[in-house]
Image (tube, rainbow, N blue to C red; front, top):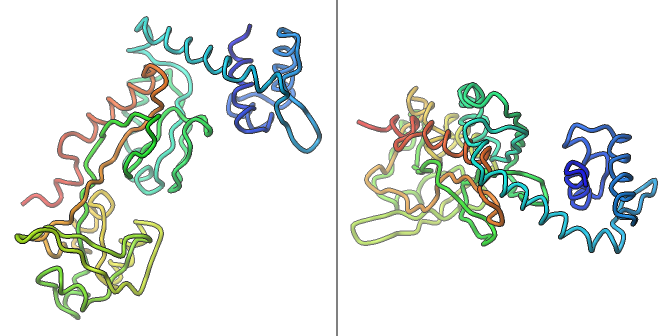
Length: 301
């Protein structure tokens, strides 16, 4: 039984599209169709219903799918257990990451990563939506949100500390808030879903409902709106560090840190031994960011 045929079948079961599944493995539609036909001939059953409009699994295909997935997992586990690929991982590593973080802090590190692992190919998808790793066929996801899926394992790559900042022009015109309650007298630019800001104070945590007149679903855009003087903004340091360094933004309320449990995580499925290519990526970027990432050092006195 050909392993590549099995891989293609599992992806077809998830995408319900032979061409799309084949494209993930750099196969043409004709070759993809031929692979599935060979697998069906080998098993002696039809696995896939094909029509001009859609693809679906047959009853036999549905029954075979979990066994195909288990076979592939066992093969991956067996290969990883040998340790042969630990120092020279090969193949395609599929990664999904938030768009801003991926562009700003993954892409710049890829030159060194690929120099160390030249036999790896990367397929990166930058998207701010939380995608299903298994359904999407991803080996690893970069996330800055709490892990809710118990079928996943997360390893911390870097801190995601957040601050309140504004442009010097805004501060000159409207003044600087002296305590969290002062925010209610200021305009804010809010990241969608973060209208309530929680601060640490000597008397405990304090929640402030902001007067956001602008809401944006992208952190870089929130940062840029603050640079334009449109209000106070809550921003991750990894997103705003360059503007802070250049003086386009200044931190306010530094004595009242935000209550935040966020971090940047590398997430992968827990139903398999950690593949060498995934381990290589995680270990490299943990080292690349370091205990105190370069963006954090921007605020060091």
